[in-house]
Amino acid sequence: MSSQPNLLHVVDSLEIGGLERLVHDLAIARGASSTSIACLSSVGPFGEALRQRGIRVDLIGQQHGLAATLWRMRSYLRTTRPDLLHCHNLRPFLIGAWSARLAGNIPVVMTKHGVAAPSGRMAKRCYRSFLRRAHVVGVSRQTAEMMSNWTGRGGHPVRYIANGISMDSFRDLPSRERARTLLGLPSRAFIVGTVSRVAHCKNHLLLLEIFSRVLGQHPGAVLLIVGDGPLLPTVKARVQELKLEQSVVLLGDRRDVPLILAAMDAFCLPSEVEGMPMTVLEAMAAGLPVVASNVGGIPDVVDEGRTGLLASPDAPEQFEAALVTLACDPARAKDMGRSGRERLVAQFSLERVLAAYEELYREPLSRRARAPWIS
Image (cartoon, rainbow, N blue to C red):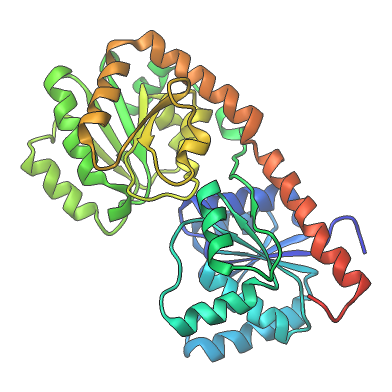
């Protein structure tokens, strides 16, 4: 067996998102010669970008139901013959693990990126059966603990491997003043922003309420909202209702997120639930103080009082106080951002994540080499 096994990532898609960004970055770091990706529903922008780099990205499709999808996936595995599957979240894991067993007991690793669990007795029993044979990872301590409690005894211990990002896009950022000039933003305003899918769990409506309160004390402040999603029309309507059109900029999906982050004074993410948000890591990479909810994996990343400020997602007054604190004390905000970048490089680098996964991959592969009939 070679030192670099042939790895297949199995994902729902490679659309724009944190999970997808992680798979994209890991595939590039690992290399095209030993890494490929199977997408169940769509290839997406990250998938197309990987194809341009020579990394194999294939679309399996989910038409005609579960049985047909399993058959296509089984045939695909028998053709491509990966040494190991790395599935991301539960549905790709179910398809991947079931097909891997049908294709010859190919070993499986599963990373759980959020805290949602399947509902229904039969679904739970089915997932549990496969999870106990797989090596399971949680991207936050909360997710890892949830998976340990949910799967119960009888399987491999669930590991905690925090997400990480590549610093390549954040090494030569322009100054804040230059970034604002390039984006047409006011040079002296307090600018706070968020980057995420515009969905209920990200709490954009709460963010607008928080920002409207901040405006009461800092009338020239600006809020940047980067991202698209099902709640965007509702957010646009709420901006009009609150008469915030002159202060809130809805940027939609962007490919220049590092530049936009470089223009901000602070990053805010008031999510209701989270796994390990990549956007918080990106904000830290850009040297920004982070104001975020104390949920999921966020407290694993943000060092309260040192690299950012945490608040309860049902307490807008806490978010308001945190943002006003940073707006009134730019020196402290810059110190927090500098400390956040140092913390990111030391603890949440892509290299560290890849090394942790490579170590994990060796366990099922060595076990299979000793006993090929055991996955």
